[in-house]
Image (cartoon, rainbow, N blue to C red; front, side):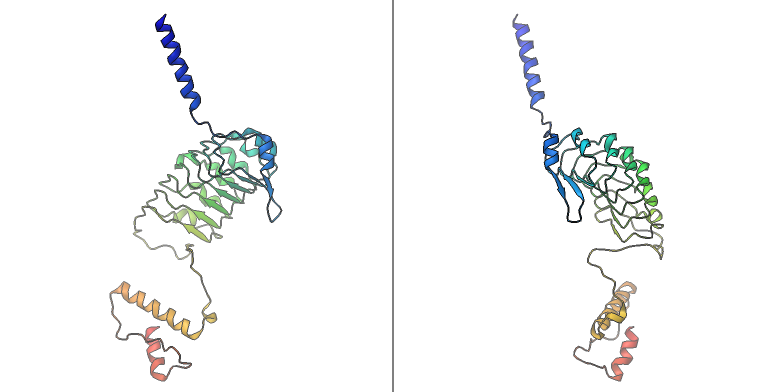
Length: 269
């Protein structure tokens, strides 16, 4: 008799512990409707970010006509195959979840322009090749994941402008995958254990960095032009181990350098 009571008590405790496990916040259709906002450019955005959601709320499939969906900063571990029912979706933010894979059906979101999957648990096997069907994609963020190689579908994203691969485990730059992306403007590969390449990068490789601006030489003032020339010469000398004979005065305040300065300027150039 005591043994039965003990068993029942242990079973009750087990159920209590199981029930105490966090299941995440439940989202109702009423809550989801109240979370729909209209952006400044007239798009309908469903914002369910930072709500401790642990499982994809199926009720929001009834709002599948929204153009933007924000499920970032939650506890999501997977997405349903029914994600492709958001046929009007142009912007999808899933950063800072616990995703280990992306369903193949994501490839059917043909109108998607921006996709943020950063700060998840995605390895190469968790990114399906069908993501290469997102031919309208302009911005893709895969930073802060578990990628040791760049996904092969990148080469198919011809409209891509921005790509985030920072904070992964990449040991080499995906030059071969990115070479054909003529519209690519920015690639962020910071905080990867990259090994130096044995061959120089291709001349047509696209590279840029934050706070780096390209300015036509004709738009520079005389003093700025001299500064740029001098800085480039210093970098070249440092790389070659050569120490220049001249200290490199900048002639600040001079409207027109004298003939000696012009001759030295030619040397610096």
